[in-house]
Image (cartoon, rainbow, N blue to C red; front, side, top):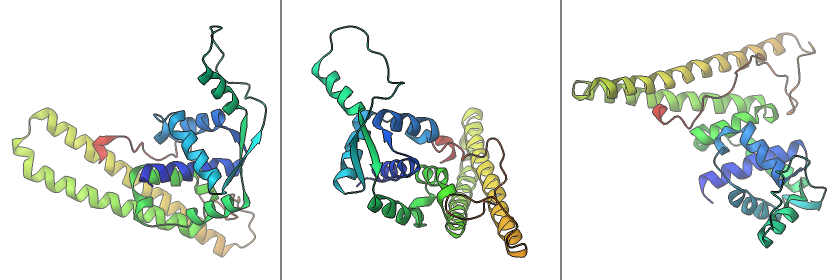
Amino acid sequence: MSRRSGILEFAVLGLLRESPMHGYELRKRLNTSLGIFRAFSYGTLYPCLKTLVANGWLIEEPGAAPADLPPTTGRAVAPASSLAGRRAKIVYRLTAEGKEHFEELLSHTGPDSWEDEHFAARFAFFGQTEHEVRMRVLEGRRSRLEERLEKMRASLARTRERLDDYTLELQRHGMESVEREVRWLNELIESERSGRDQRRSSPGSGAQQNTAGEPDGLPRRRGDTPPDPSDDTAK
């Protein structure tokens, strides 16, 4: 399985854990909630769904077509369009085995979870992730970016005399993007630690619970989303 396929399977399982969905609705949620899947198509999603069904992690159920499906043009349709219509009426539901598998994936904190696309997907489901796992992922991501930043600075120091003004400015922009994400991660890590400390000193204080059963210590601020990993200047 490719890394991107693994990320897509993780995201699909996570969204279906919230509620069953049609393929069209699922694709829309992946596009709007997880920007890393902006460019993927039905030709990518449906093989993934079939694989998850074959593994016993999803089941297919008949259902009404979503109300917001794109309207037809009124022209004669090819058989492929009929197939698309039948696909749109299938509802995908997470099985007990699928939920268990997703929870197992949520507990993973290895180096893959720190990489750009995988981290964005993991962060999108932090509300379903245990506190200790969130901390390991955040700290791993910060460590990875600090290593990247050190290499970028060293490279710039070696080559800056040979770069024209525009290339130099692009290099600086890339460094600033990484520095900005490191600062963002520092804030998140501090918020996680502060929330944990407050819960230890005030048990039963009624802190808000996330879906993983952990009180959520993160401040609810607009724009608290991961920087876009598709920004190649930050790599």
